[in-house]
Figure 1 (tube, one colour):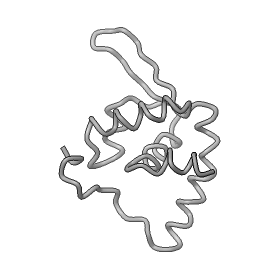
Figure 2 (figure 1 turned 135 degrees about the horizontal axis):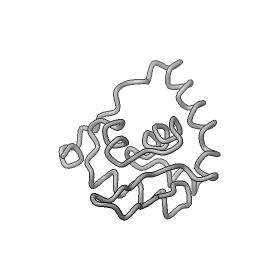
Figure 3 (figure 1 turned 90 degrees about the vertical axis):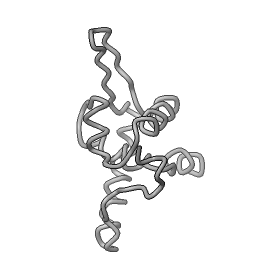
Figure 4 (figure 1 turned 60 degrees about the vertical axis):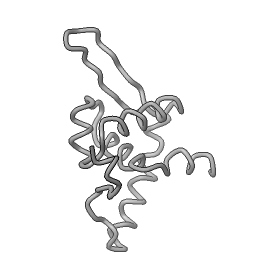
Length: 108
C-alpha cells in the first residue's frame, strides 16, 4: 500500500487520475483544461510517471499535428472506486475546494 500511496500522492496526481476516470479517453489539452492551474510541464511529468507505473496508456497518432490521447489502463481503472470514496469523504468533511496550486512555478 505504501508504494501505491507514494505513486499517487504527488502534486496533482490524484486529481489527474480522478479526471481521467470520468472519461474513456482524453487528449492532453482537454486534460490540462480539466486540471486548472497545472502547467504543461508538470502535467507531462505526472502522465509519464503514471504511464511508467502502468496506470495510464498514451496513444500517439503521427498526424500533422500529432494526436496524443491518454486513457487509464485496466490497472488504472482499479483505482476508480478508491478515488470515488476519497471524493465522498472530502465532500463530507467539507474539503472539496478548487484544485489550485499556490506554487508560482507550477502555475506557468
